[in-house]
Image 1 (cartoon, rainbow, N blue to C red):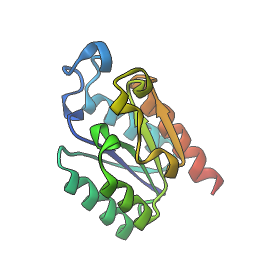
Image 2: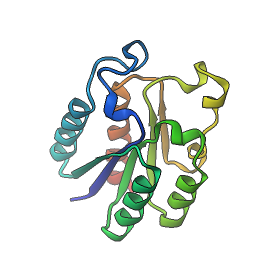
Image 3: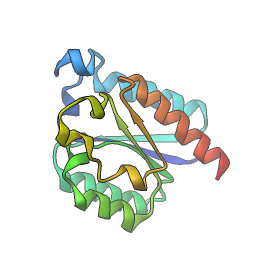
Length: 147
Protein backbone atom coordinates (compact mmCIF):
# COMPACT_ATOMS: atom_id res chain seq x y z
CA UNK A 1 0.00 0.00 0.00
CA UNK A 2 1.38 3.37 -1.02
CA UNK A 3 0.80 6.59 0.90
CA UNK A 4 -0.50 9.59 -1.01
CA UNK A 5 -0.80 13.04 0.55
CA UNK A 6 -3.32 15.53 -0.83
CA UNK A 7 -2.52 19.13 0.10
CA UNK A 8 -4.83 22.05 -0.58
CA UNK A 9 -3.48 25.52 0.10
CA UNK A 10 -4.96 28.85 1.12
CA UNK A 11 -8.64 29.55 0.48
CA UNK A 12 -9.40 26.10 -0.91
CA UNK A 13 -11.42 25.37 2.23
CA UNK A 14 -13.94 27.78 0.65
CA UNK A 15 -14.59 25.59 -2.39
CA UNK A 16 -18.28 25.29 -3.08
CA UNK A 17 -18.97 28.90 -2.12
CA UNK A 18 -15.91 30.83 -3.32
CA UNK A 19 -16.28 32.36 -6.77
CA UNK A 20 -18.41 29.50 -8.15
CA UNK A 21 -18.11 30.94 -11.66
CA UNK A 22 -14.39 30.09 -11.49
CA UNK A 23 -14.19 27.19 -9.03
CA UNK A 24 -17.61 25.55 -9.30
CA UNK A 25 -19.91 24.46 -6.49
CA UNK A 26 -18.20 21.25 -5.38
CA UNK A 27 -16.87 21.37 -1.81
CA UNK A 28 -13.39 20.34 -0.73
CA UNK A 29 -14.92 17.59 1.40
CA UNK A 30 -16.66 16.14 -1.67
CA UNK A 31 -13.37 16.19 -3.60
CA UNK A 32 -11.49 14.54 -0.74
CA UNK A 33 -14.10 11.79 -0.32
CA UNK A 34 -14.05 10.96 -4.02
CA UNK A 35 -10.24 10.83 -4.10
CA UNK A 36 -10.08 8.68 -0.95
CA UNK A 37 -12.38 6.14 -2.62
CA UNK A 38 -10.29 6.21 -5.79
CA UNK A 39 -7.06 5.69 -3.83
CA UNK A 40 -8.54 2.89 -1.72
CA UNK A 41 -9.89 1.13 -4.83
CA UNK A 42 -6.29 0.95 -6.07
CA UNK A 43 -4.97 -0.25 -2.70
CA UNK A 44 -3.48 3.08 -1.62
CA UNK A 45 -3.98 5.31 1.40
CA UNK A 46 -4.86 8.98 0.91
CA UNK A 47 -4.24 11.52 3.66
CA UNK A 48 -5.80 14.97 3.19
CA UNK A 49 -4.66 18.35 4.47
CA UNK A 50 -5.91 21.85 3.84
CA UNK A 51 -4.18 24.84 5.36
CA UNK A 52 -4.20 28.57 4.93
CA UNK A 53 -0.74 28.73 6.53
CA UNK A 54 2.36 28.24 4.41
CA UNK A 55 4.40 26.90 7.33
CA UNK A 56 1.84 24.15 8.01
CA UNK A 57 2.03 23.02 4.39
CA UNK A 58 5.83 23.02 4.52
CA UNK A 59 5.78 21.10 7.81
CA UNK A 60 3.39 18.53 6.31
CA UNK A 61 5.72 17.93 3.36
CA UNK A 62 8.74 17.57 5.63
CA UNK A 63 6.78 15.16 7.86
CA UNK A 64 5.61 13.24 4.79
CA UNK A 65 9.24 12.61 3.95
CA UNK A 66 9.77 11.10 7.40
CA UNK A 67 6.52 9.08 7.23
CA UNK A 68 7.30 7.29 3.96
CA UNK A 69 4.77 9.16 1.86
CA UNK A 70 5.24 8.02 -1.73
CA UNK A 71 3.74 10.92 -3.66
CA UNK A 72 1.86 14.20 -3.13
CA UNK A 73 -0.97 15.88 -5.00
CA UNK A 74 -0.93 19.60 -4.26
CA UNK A 75 -3.13 22.53 -5.16
CA UNK A 76 -0.96 25.24 -3.66
CA UNK A 77 -3.43 28.00 -4.54
CA UNK A 78 -1.76 31.41 -4.42
CA UNK A 79 1.45 29.93 -2.97
CA UNK A 80 2.11 28.68 -6.50
CA UNK A 81 3.14 32.17 -7.52
CA UNK A 82 4.87 33.34 -4.35
CA UNK A 83 6.50 30.55 -2.37
CA UNK A 84 10.13 29.81 -3.02
CA UNK A 85 10.08 28.13 0.41
CA UNK A 86 7.53 25.60 -0.87
CA UNK A 87 9.71 24.90 -3.89
CA UNK A 88 12.78 24.44 -1.67
CA UNK A 89 10.85 22.01 0.52
CA UNK A 90 9.98 19.80 -2.44
CA UNK A 91 13.56 19.93 -3.66
CA UNK A 92 14.86 19.06 -0.18
CA UNK A 93 12.50 16.16 0.49
CA UNK A 94 12.58 14.79 -3.07
CA UNK A 95 8.96 13.62 -2.77
CA UNK A 96 7.42 13.41 -6.25
CA UNK A 97 4.30 15.52 -6.65
CA UNK A 98 1.57 16.52 -9.06
CA UNK A 99 0.58 20.19 -9.16
CA UNK A 100 -3.09 20.96 -9.76
CA UNK A 101 -5.09 24.12 -10.42
CA UNK A 102 -8.85 24.18 -10.84
CA UNK A 103 -8.83 27.26 -13.06
CA UNK A 104 -6.66 27.85 -16.09
CA UNK A 105 -3.99 30.06 -14.56
CA UNK A 106 -2.85 31.07 -18.05
CA UNK A 107 -6.20 32.72 -18.77
CA UNK A 108 -6.11 34.81 -15.63
CA UNK A 109 -4.06 37.73 -14.33
CA UNK A 110 -0.43 37.92 -15.44
CA UNK A 111 0.91 37.25 -11.93
CA UNK A 112 -0.86 33.86 -11.90
CA UNK A 113 0.97 32.63 -15.00
CA UNK A 114 4.21 31.88 -13.12
CA UNK A 115 4.58 28.75 -11.01
CA UNK A 116 7.55 28.07 -8.76
CA UNK A 117 6.62 24.36 -8.79
CA UNK A 118 5.70 23.20 -12.29
CA UNK A 119 9.21 22.51 -13.54
CA UNK A 120 10.02 20.20 -10.61
CA UNK A 121 6.70 18.30 -10.58
CA UNK A 122 5.93 14.94 -12.17
CA UNK A 123 2.85 16.51 -13.75
CA UNK A 124 0.61 19.56 -13.85
CA UNK A 125 -3.16 19.52 -14.20
CA UNK A 126 -4.42 23.00 -15.03
CA UNK A 127 -7.83 24.34 -15.94
CA UNK A 128 -9.88 21.13 -15.81
CA UNK A 129 -12.15 22.25 -12.99
CA UNK A 130 -12.50 20.05 -9.94
CA UNK A 131 -12.31 17.06 -12.30
CA UNK A 132 -8.61 17.83 -12.43
CA UNK A 133 -8.24 16.20 -9.03
CA UNK A 134 -9.33 12.89 -10.56
CA UNK A 135 -6.82 13.39 -13.37
CA UNK A 136 -4.11 14.07 -10.80
CA UNK A 137 -5.03 10.86 -8.97
CA UNK A 138 -4.83 8.95 -12.26
CA UNK A 139 -1.33 10.38 -12.83
CA UNK A 140 -0.31 9.35 -9.31
CA UNK A 141 -1.65 5.82 -9.74
CA UNK A 142 0.25 5.45 -13.02
CA UNK A 143 3.40 6.82 -11.38
CA UNK A 144 3.11 4.33 -8.51
CA UNK A 145 2.45 1.45 -10.91
CA UNK A 146 5.39 2.29 -13.16
CA UNK A 147 8.12 3.19 -10.66
